[in-house]
Every structure is written in structure tokens, then in C-alpha cells.
Length: 374
Image 1 (tube, rainbow, N blue to C red):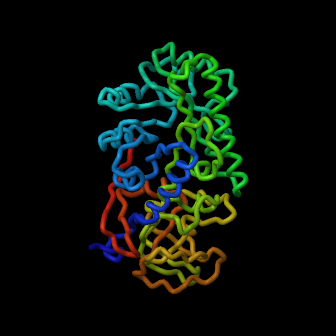
Image 2 (image 1 turned 135 degrees about the vertical axis):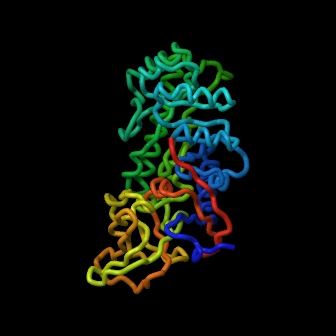
Image 3 (image 1 turned 180 degrees about the vertical axis):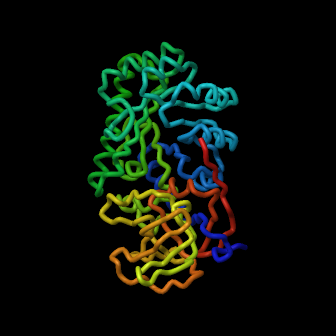
């Protein structure tokens, strides 16, 4: 069996036990609230990693690229929500998936798109926090957009929102508040569509999809009345941004980059490693948080954090470790293996072709392949 001392560095490492614990925590919580998880696979981009979360069944999933939709369809998944604003140039590719048997649902907030596409099942994107795309729940454009979709031969299936603004929330009360804001806004938009004659009025008529979600709001929602599904993906691995928000602890983070010490600059108080931005990514998501983790928090080979050591600088294939306060860095000889916890699991994962799966402290019994592209 391979172990961490035998792997070429830098490489990606995932702790299987932490993935399982993270999955159980959220899935159980949502079950108690009576709403299923529609896992967002954009973080993992791996059939094996997703199966470690949802089991051998093939439940509904969320994707952020058509490449993800195609890969997961080939892996047996059929109910797929493409949760990025759709553009008409992608119609032919999307229809090929549908012709193969996918129940593909698209997303738009654009009346131009609504008029240019036909034959699709579509959610209308709702903006509940001013973070990114979508129509406001009370927007005067909501009903005209739904009418345009229907007139073009599409099915208005419901609404979707993503409270990305939750990433800027601090403290349990603020996270609970934005989760409720997300829920209430999506439900209000769906109610307006129903009152306008969409979805039918009879009890047996199809009910609208009301899809909400982000990793922070999924963990802090206190009620999900009127919601039909919750989307989240980063929780599979968690990361330093999530820890900084207060959604998880550092000890919950399942993803790390294995690296090797390859030099020192005693005059500067630096330890050099072979993981630069090509391995760690350039994401600096903790820079605006109370604790800036640089380009990643340093751990020993067993994953135990050196809480005051961070990667302070990166170039393409070099990382620079320093004490966050400028203090003395512990003796880390050339050849020492370390693990760097990422700021953003999605960005760091995207730098690698697969996950080396750790069980115990250093044993690596499996590798989960991942893919990229659009």
C-alpha cells in the first residue's frame, strides 16, 4: 500500500473519514428539516468522490458546466440541474444530453435567452441577496420572463437562488438571517408564478421546484418551508474560507496539498516548498476575513496544523512559508513533507488531476480521478 512519503509532490490529498463526516452532518440536518440535498458536484468533479457522499445510488445533482453534466450522465446520473445562466449557443449540446435520456434543467434570468431557446425545462434565477445574477423576488420582469419561456416552447419548472452573499456573513445570527432571506425570497417568487397561473392551481398539479442553497446557508437554515431542495458542494471537503465564516472547524477540512520542503532563507525567516500557485491556486479568499490564511495553512504530514505557519507568497512552482506574525519558523529540514489546507477547495482541486485518498494518518489505499474543462 502506498503512503504519503511515497507520493510525488505536490499532489492533492483527501481524508476519506472527514468527507464521510461532513456528508453525514449536512445530509442528516437537511433530512430533519424535510428537504433533500441536490449535491453540487462542481467542487469534487469526481465520480468516486461524489459516490463517497451520496452512496451508490444516483440521486439528483447540480452542475456548473456542461462538461460536468456529460461526465456525470456517463456515470449514471440522470436528474441534472445546470445551475449557471444558460446561453442559446449551448442548445445543441444540451439537447444531445436530453436525447440520451438526461432530465436536464436549465437556468436563466434573461428574456433574450427565453425567446431564443425551445424545448427545455427551465428554472428562473432569483436574486435574494444582491450577490450576483437573478431577478428580485418582486421584480416586474418575473412574469414576462416566465411567459416568454412558455411561449417559446419551454417548461417553467420553478425558481432557483444562490445566497452567495452568505460568504460575507459573520456569526451564527447573520448566517441564520441570510438563510431565511434566501428561503423567503425564493418562496415568494414561486408564489407569484403560481398566482400568475404557472404550475396549475389544483392540488394534484405539478408543484414548482424551489431550489436554494450555499454551503453556509445549508448549515444555518432553521426552517425550509416551501423549499423543495437544497444545493451545496463545498461542504464535501470544506476549506479555510468556510472555517473563517464559522461553518466548520479547521479540523473538518478534508482536502490538502501534500508538499515537500526544498529550501530555506534564514535571513528572511522563510521555508520554501515545492507547491506554488500551480498547486495551491491563487485564491486569497481569507484575505478579507478576520484571520488571513495567506495561500494556505501549514500542517505536518499527518494533517496536524501549525496554526501560526502559513504560505505567505507563491510563484508558479514555489511556495514560501512564514510565521504569520513574522516570528521564528520551526526547524523543517529539506525533504520534510507537509500538507497545506486550501483557502478554496474548488480552486485548489482544479489544479490537480485526482485525489490521493488517505485513511488513517498516512496510508493511501485509493485514488479518485477528477476532471476539468467546460
